[in-house]
Length: 73
Image (cartoon, rainbow, N blue to C red; front, side, top):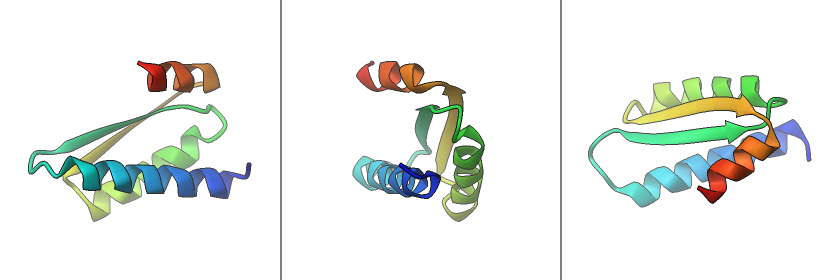
């Protein structure tokens, strides 16, 4: 899987989560996992924050195991 396709999936998931929330308060999304893409994900999160300031995207690495554990929790 390429970095570009991973970023597309992250963007789709982020937009989907925001659309599903429907809340007027600030929405917080956590992106945990891949150390390989953490810099790209952080950049995407910063750019998305400029477009939609009501959404905070927190990005952290830790590896795939961390991402899977966070998703299960």
